[in-house]
Image (tube, rainbow, N blue to C red; front, side, top):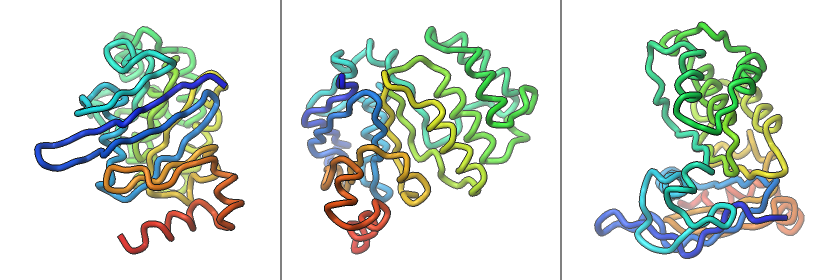
Length: 233
């Protein structure tokens, strides 16, 4: 399968603190990678560099063979772990905004996903629950024709019903010609999505591989592996 994402010795320093310490990852098309680690492990920094929101201190990455830079910003769709939509916006206003801003935005798909998410086009962000806002942001992120989708803690703080709808959307949106990275510490809720997993701690990948192979070799679920790895951290 074609390689969607490749990182080589990716590093990030904030003054004297090292946030990433040489991350090496390869992700093929049609795959969903679970990027797992506790808060402060480097997950968000890693995703922001891939999305072009931060600059690496060293190393490099490529998306579908294109070296990270201005061009790859148009190949990557990033769902942040915080809401950036204005409170006055209706769902349809947010869709209009993304339609104007991103040349690869698929408005018809966005409206279809809005219906699937059971979100009203006229509902305002300030009137939505946290779960509804998460679903709207996920709708916007997945309505781009991107090659790499980056989801930073998409289930954080939402109720179980909203989580299931979000997981269903990720499955519904999955395509063979793109790849998805899901950053999370709520492993039990989403591990069934993952083809590949990478455990990150203190800015380093400490274990990675095919999810099913790791389950078979270790005799544990991915959630159990997560608990085993990070229980003393």
